[in-house]
Amino acid sequence: MSALTLSRLKKSFGGTDVIKGVDLDVTEGEFVVFVGPSGCGKSTLLRMIAGLEEVSGGEIVIAGKPVNDLPPVKRGIAMVFQSYALYPHMSVFENIAFPLRVERLAEDEVRHRVGEAARILQLESRLQHKPGMLSGGQRQRVAIGRAIVREPRIFLFDEPLSNLDAALRSDMRVELTRLHKRLGATMIYVTHDQVEALTMADKIVVLNGGRIEQVGTPLDLYHRPQNRFVAGFIGNPK
Ligand code: ADP
Ligand code: MG
Image (cartoon, rainbow, N blue to C red):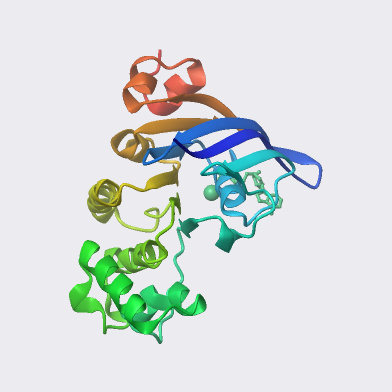
């Protein structure tokens, strides 16, 4: 079944076309990576799916339901950003629980969901700490925990590892892949990093100038790039 369908999706800012007619189908449970150079429209596309940006044309369907007119909280998605804002004065527990407090979930359900997220992310021993006492990787895991507790149908990640150093980034790639297998959720992951795309994706969507250049598995793109842009960008120039 389709988790997400984009049809002729468009976005313009003040008369400038930034997303120029994107068609895409994402199957439930897939790990899809949007990759492309800076400024090609990756974040804009993700923000439209999340409902943080109005569409200028076309349609977004999530789990069979058109969502163009639905606010972010009604879309069944959770987004993890590059600059994850944790509340410095709150414990890790309360940082992860925050979206559930907003939803006014019962206390035992909050404890259950935060406990489960902390177990998956190996943060159990850190729940009473403040964010300032954590490493960069642990802080990023708290931000991911905050998405997990909402039990979304679709996770959206916008360059979540770009503030981490190279060694940590490589560890987190493995962790995120493991998390995807474990949750079985649909994940859409934006990066400008070809290595991340090739190592993490079930399916890669190569974007350039607001259009899709090619969609395929990492092997497809690496061995059978459809044009020079994809060949050059994915790193197998011909
Ligand atoms: P990426 O995430 O791939 O780096 P973005 O989606 O952030 O690209 O941006 C795509 C283009 O849209 C860029 O040219 C950017 O300057 C422009 N853009 C993004 N957001 C806005 C906005 N709120 N107002 C005007 N232009 C914007
Ligand atoms: Mg971006």
